[in-house]
Image 1 (tube, rainbow, N blue to C red):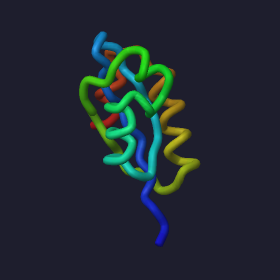
Image 2: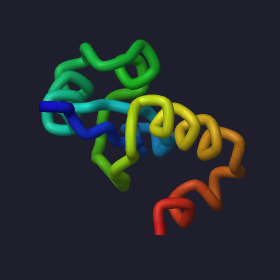
Image 3: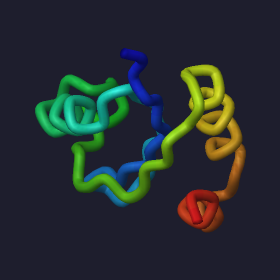
Length: 81
């Protein structure tokens, strides 16, 4: 069975956003919370998952991640609407 890919945005303890892709949201958030998800989130501290969107495949998820990262901060969350 093929896993569903997702793009997500989370908030760090310092208020900054982190955008990433995963095929297991729960496992990825657990890794971030334990300081094992990414160097950025490990350094800044995980606060909460803000948005998640399903994508058709890994390539699509990565393209969405790139598009979100190009946006100014005040537009990132509305991309998911």
